[in-house]
Amino acid sequence: MDKPIIEPLTKEEMEKWPSTPLVDLGKPFVDKRGSIQPLVDLMMKSAVIIESKAGSLRANHYHKTDWHYCYVIKGKIEYFHREVNSTKKPELIIVEKENMIFTPPMVEHCMKFPLDTLFLTLSRNPRDQKTYEEDVVRTNLIEPGESITWKPNEF
View 1 (cartoon, helix red, strand yellow):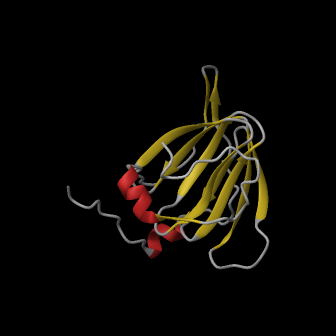
View 2 (cartoon, helix red, strand yellow):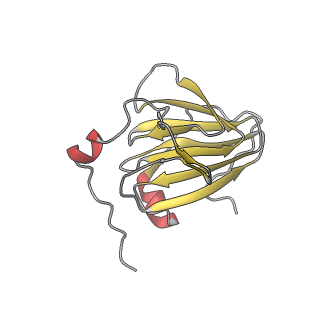
View 3 (cartoon, rainbow, N blue to C red):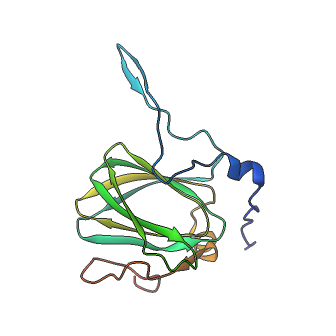
C-alpha cells in the first residue's frame, strides 16, 4: 500500500488561519426557514463527528502538519493548548455549545469533557489511522489522572 501524501504547509494556507484559538463565527444567515451558520471555507480532507463521555480526555498531543477546527454541537470542552516546546502553563479555553476552536500544527492540545459532548472536527489531512499516526506526536500536556483515556495499542 502506498504511503499517504501529506502536503507541506504553505504561507498562503497559514495566512487564512484564525488569529486566536476561539473562532469568531460571524453572524448566521437567517430567514423564515431557519438559519445557516458558516463554519469554515477552506479545503480540507476530513470531517468527523466525535462523541465524548463526561470525564473523558482526548488529544494530549500535537500534529506536525495537520490543523483542525472543532465545533461543539452539544456539551462542553475544556481545551488546553500551548506551543510545542513551551515551558508556559497551558492556556485553558472553555468551549461551549455552538462555539468553535482552531488548532494549528505544532500546538500541544488536550481536551477534557465535563459533560457528554458531541463535536464536529474538520481537518486538513485525511483521518485514516496510518496518516493520522504519522502526523501526531503524543504528549502529556495534561496528566490524565482519573480521566477516561485511550492509547493507540489499546483495543
